[in-house]
Length: 131
Image 1 (cartoon, rainbow, N blue to C red):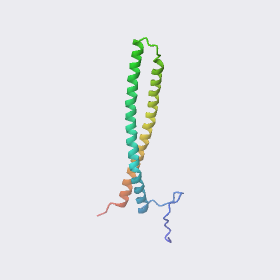
Image 2: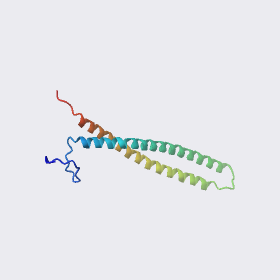
Image 3: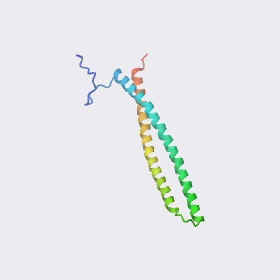
Image 4: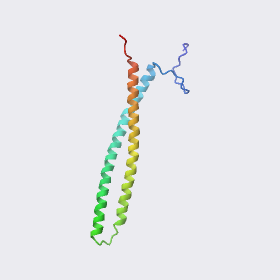
């Protein structure tokens, strides 16, 4: 270690990020480790969003049907409170859907950054040859 090159990553950001095969291998390894998890989360979010959209549509249809029933019958049961509950549930689903969309957007950004880092580390391992 007398050449002055440190193998440790310093917290103050003074590490040389030039050719560092250990760092590149570590980066690629971490990214390859995280990629399946990110992909799985992304698929789960997409499936959940689709299910929520379907549920929101079903709630809307049920709400419309309950309004029609309430208008056509003189029912001793007050359906208006149930309709309000369904509409509240639809609002909550919309809010959760928005949260899931934000999470999916963040996962997409992580996925893109991971892909860029992999390409970057692979290109530093295989520099172009001047011929």
